[in-house]
Image (cartoon, rainbow, N blue to C red):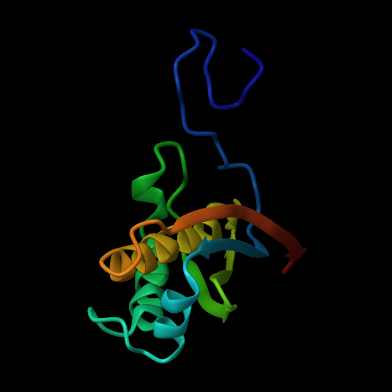
Length: 149
């Protein structure tokens, strides 16, 4: 096996990062929730029966980023220094963007991706009663950077 996530016996292992130095890291991820126009309008106007869908999704995304090391089996738990979640509402969609930063030995892209995924799920949960046909799409990493400290 050539992957660092497997030992010589083919067993899954956490990658050894003990030899690495901490560096400043930043990652940006995005996701899209597609919905009916009426649903997007309700979200914008804060008229979803369950409450403010974007406020709930923002908190859900931040909380999820902080739990990434517990959710993804071989992901290192890291000290997150910041996580931000922003939303852009269109006629029939909500685009979610997260930006996460840390100074660590390993990256923060999984935290940024987890944040947008769970924020999208929270929007779905808040709005499923009015629009059960919503679709979560395009969860992706937009960028990741690192710089020496």
